[in-house]
Amino acid sequence: MDIQEVLNWTDEQVFTKTGKHLDWLQKSILQGIWQHQDYYEIAANNEKSYDHVKKEAWKLWKLLSDVVGEDVKKSNVFSVLEQAELSATGNSTNFMQIGIGNNQVNICSEQHRSPSDLSSSHSPTPQDSSPIIDLTDAPDLTEFYSRTSELTTLKQWILQDHTRLITIYGLSGIGKSLLTRQLIEQIKTEFDYMMWRSLSDRPTLSSLKNQLQQFFAQSQQPSLPTIIDYLRHSRCLVILDDLHNLFKSGELAGEYLTDYKEYRTFFRQIAKNHHQSCVILISWEKPREIATLEAEKHSTRTLHLKGLSADAEKILRSHQLTDSDKWPELINLYQGHPTWLNIIASTIVELFDGSVSLFLSYSEDIFLGDLEPILESHLERLSDLEQQVISGFRKNQAIALSQKPTNPELSQSELWSAIQSLVRRGLLEKISEGERGMFQLHPIWQQYLKFKLS
Ligand SMILES: Nc1ncnc2c1ncn2[C@@H]1O[C@H](COP(=O)(O)OP(=O)(O)OP(=O)(O)O)[C@@H](O)[C@H]1O
Ligand SMILES: [Mg+2]
Image (cartoon, rainbow, N blue to C red):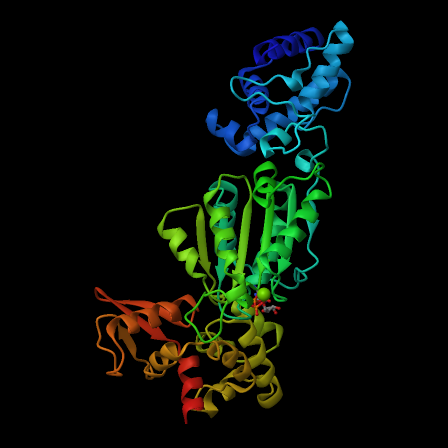
């Protein structure tokens, strides 16, 4: 029996029970599953959206469950139909052992299963039930101020563009983890598996893969050979937080420690191989290979997370600061950085009874106080080259790429590499000035360098 006969037999059963035939999309879904396609491929082949196909498939499984009197899912549709056909005719055609064209498979006897074989296996998969979630390493959902445009962008990349690898990078405390925690709250129903893993304890790649494998294998038996197979077989959202812990200090940004270079290949595979999942990397620094993957136009996107804009005022309000007309100045001074603003707001309450005007009027310099150790944690990671270049920035001065290095020992290409690396750390910002690429160091960092170098 081939797929056409399976479709004819199923259509007959549906017609007998409901008086209606299967429509073309229902047949295409069955045909796609028979050919071991996932919902993405079926959607693409039929010029429909993934969501639409998933919804229609869900209705189809419900219809077939009613028709054959058993619980039908994507994972068991052909084995249930086979059983139903067997009981109806007493003559098994064994649907599962018959493939199409060159794609012939025998699911039960295969030792090494390909993921596509397993998409039709008898074991339950979470595809049609609620997602399996491990958020042990994720931060708690605390008070969160909007970030509407960032959330919209990320949802678009994940749900509509089906981006396979996303990097969110930015300064410590800028809100990367909280934003991602908020994001997954809004999209978790779109996934079968969701796992958050912090890399702060520097797991080797093989240990990370083992953990992921164990997590996926909980509900996917038999287990699949590789992580990519799971990403292909189910809709998985994996968040790898604190990635910068795997990068070298004292080198240009995003360079892996010696024992962690394999991660680079792993992330390349995730971006380049076809699958239906998404991996989000969260880091202080943009990894070097991500820039290359973006240049090669693989399924990779990067979000550089910056400070809060208007919503930063809510932080100041939560500390009950006064002189709200001065709040925009304070926010601008501290880059809308939520952690920095929380720290400075506490100082203003402690020293100035909450008066922002008094705080701003007292000092000519930008007050750093408890921000110093946070700023230092970034600057201590710089390479010698970056240290030389960054200390060349003077107050309110921007550097153009065409400019000759102030230090005559530096070559032009060294200057460019250092600038590129400082941008990948979120320390330098590109500002457009005429047609020249100009880069600027924010006053907070200038102030800290002044304090350090004095
Ligand atoms: N959108 C937001 N609304 C309110 N508070 C925020 C927001 N984003 C960040 N914060 C505040 O900043 C703190 C730090 O945020 P978060 O832990 O997400 O930073 P991070 O960028 O992940 O830092 P790190 O890289 O050091 O882990 C939060 O605990 C919260 O107090
Ligand atoms: Mg974090």
